[in-house]
Image (spheres, rainbow, N blue to C red):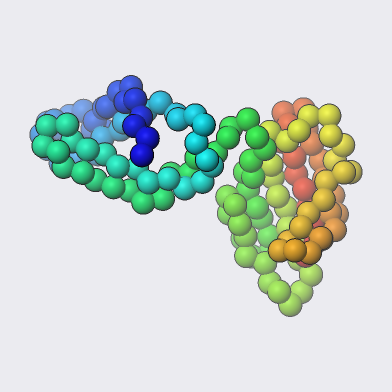
Length: 136
C-alpha cells in the first residue's frame, strides 16, 4: 500500500452542490520507486470512511523511457495493440514516443512472440518519435 499526497480535489460540474452525487477530480503526486504496471486505486472518504476501489484502472510507467503510442494494422489500430490476420502477410506500423536519440532507424528490430520479424521501414524524427513498419 502506498499513500499518495492529494494536491487538490475539484468538482467536475461546479454548478452542482458539494453534497450531490457527482464526478470529482483528484490531483495526486506521482509515486516514485514503484514497479511499472497496472495499479489499484483506493479512495477513502475522510469523514464517512467509505471506500471506493478501482482495479487496474491506472497503469504506471516510466515517462523517461520509450513508450508505444499506437499500433496500426490492416484491421484497425489501438494504443498498444492491433488485430492482424494470421493467414496473410500484413504490414503493421508501431509509433514510439521518446525513441532513443542518435540511434539510426536501420538498427531497429522486432520480435513477435518468440520469432524475429523483418522491419520493412523505420524512421526517427527530431522530436524522437519513431515509426517502425514491420511485416508479419
